[in-house]
Image 1 (tube, rainbow, N blue to C red):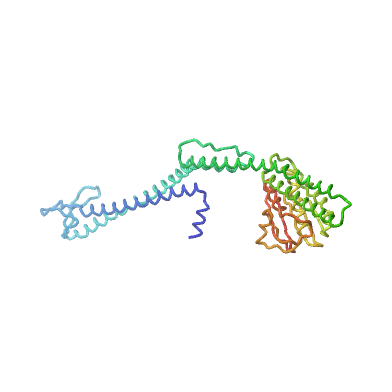
Image 2 (cartoon, rainbow, N blue to C red):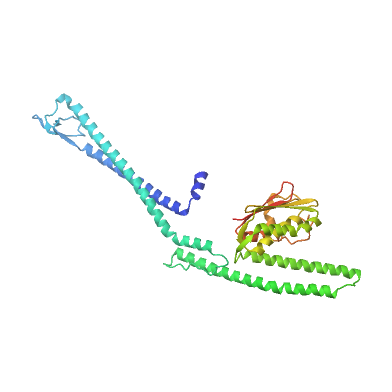
Length: 404
């Protein structure tokens, strides 16, 4: 039962509704046909019992009914259909049996023909009912299809679009109004987020820049040894705060999507980023290898795509081991970054793409905030790409970004 039921639940709602129309009509028609056949069989049986046969020749002429115990004489039929002389007295029982057999055969033939043609008519009408149900379901679900198409088309760039469904105040009209109300709330939320990102880029970066300048100027050399260490700690903390704010702003920007896509050469970006991180790889004693097979031009935001490649490579360098390796491959529309390191639990791979999630502190690079892969996933989603990650055979992680 589980298999057919699961197969039925996977069918579109319109198909299931049309099949329900056909099935309901078929069941009700079959019940009605069975009722008619039973009544017809009972009625014809009663009529056969009431049939009278009369003896048309001889002086002892009297009526006989099928229920009479004595077999009467009756008229016969000639080849031309005229009433002929009745049978002899000794042939009465045989003649009556022939009449009874003939009547029953005619009755069965009539019922069989009625059942056959009624069944054919029932199947044809069930198909017509299914087609009618398909058409009615399409008309009834047309507002739902409009809601679905609008939901697929609307993004944060055109949240001002509304269904504005017209017609009677029924369940579908209230559903469309609820959807429009939800879009109003989403538009206000996205507008508030855009204002926050715009203001935060200035309100947060400016004080940190002023703080860094004050530290560098106020604690300039020459300083006592203990103050030099304090200055370095303050500058490191300030630098980490700036990096965190920049990463959060980048994550918020990528979540908004690509507003004005332009042709981007991903192969050139990949090679440039790998070349820029070569010195950092040497510093951490990690071998960085790059393999680019042919150019790849795709529509997108060049700044965001550069951050995508940079975060992938920097994450592969930081979460690595001494004398490890990072392999970058761009083959067709697939970008793959694999590294070595500690074994990663397959059940926890999905957590790496959540903000501020890190699996251990065994990194050879600088400290981070657990936003690298979150930014990668957000930028990939903004460009319609799919991101997958799996543990490497020698430890570490293999991250694949496939562009459509």
